[in-house]
Image (cartoon, rainbow, N blue to C red; front, side, top):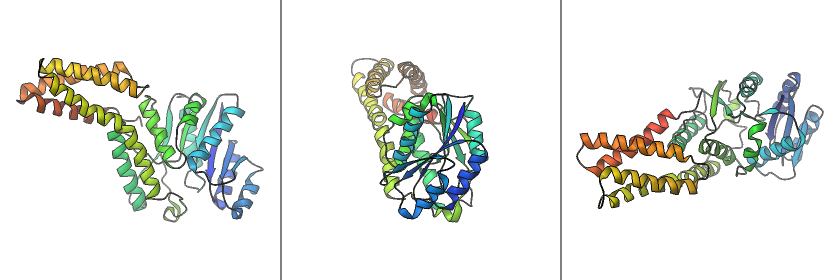
Length: 318
């Protein structure tokens, strides 16, 4: 099985040369995508071209486009099985950590693997804050806990390459789209702890805190819109059905309607899991109604508990 490293690069410096040299010593197959860098970076790409394949965008198209250009090249040009690891070009990922992802992914071909950084006191404040907020919003939107949603060190096998190419997104929002797609399709997201390195307070990053954060949260909101709609629709239908049937029957019928609607909205959604959720919600509703007077209050508490339970028990494997 081939081990491939893919590096999207925009305005790189000598740290990229050092990284390529280290990867070459480990006998990795290396692909670098020059994402429309300026002429000042030409020497860097010429220097590394003897040790790796360099693909070029004539203009800057964004990290997401650069990654998908690399994925498409790998799919079309490498016929055998492989694991591809994506790394950033700024020297903030260690070779040993990339090797950890390769080793794990070779035995878990259907999983997306993340190199998960710790966020201690030495991490720049904007990175700590950004990751903490995104982590919480992502968990609420998907019910899946991912500690480091913004890591660029990721790996997957050729089994997932088609999905990765199809995922929308051109710039940094592509990486959150990747996590949203995997969470939505039930693909396991596995995190492996890696060393946290920020060089010069992460000054080399091309991430725009306001513009790119807006794009990331917009994608999460778009993903969760169907869930929010079905949450309120479920409660409204439940209240209307109470006019004609018992509260338990109302819960089952409203759940089934929302289950079917959500299935047609999200084609990858599992009906069996939704039916299991309906059974669980009916049991919880019965328990809450036994303890708390009021069938509507009991219903709201039931749905809130299901959301909290989904977040805590459907965490990523680490």
